[in-house]
Image (tube, rainbow over all chains, first blue to last red; front, side, top):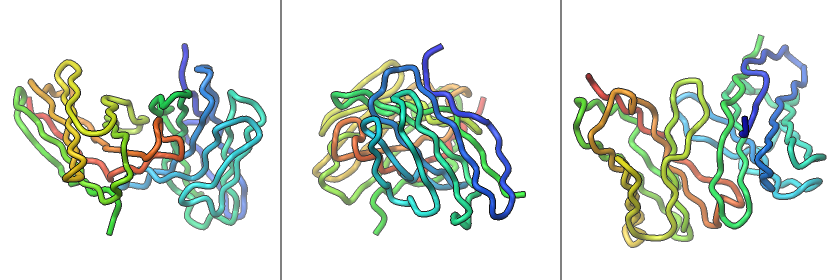
Length: 112
Length: 113
């Protein structure tokens, strides 16, 4: 099936640990995005990439890192520098020509 | 001042009613407007995507944009219990949210059978 696939669905992080969230797409989207959603809040942009090997910080990039080595993949690493990492993380993709963003089903990250 | 304001609800209406959901915004550069539906523990699903001012209809859903008032609306006709979800408005200056989308906090909608 085509779409945006995020894994794992649930993830737990220990203090001082880095964790990586996976986002894969087979829609040939050029652009990919990572958002964070907190309870009762809208989505906030962490990082985005419009082309392979290039990415830009969003509104809340501190404590996060990304890579875009392949068009299909845009992993997000939540580093130990992110002091409040518990949230629902959503990955999105969009084609060129002003196409709207489509989302995966998210990864819920919690602290042990 | 928050960029996008959206009443979090909950908004509870009986089955079959017409639902009106709204967002206001402050950034006059926004040109692209979206409505997403989000079920619990799921990612947002795109419902409507519009450019500039005007109306767009798709089945039971109608999106309206009034850029002069910085006000957007989503109407749901013949509401069904399956429409119970959180509805998020989103907007961007460039097409497709090339620089990322700005979201409202979402309205929690409950359709009572």
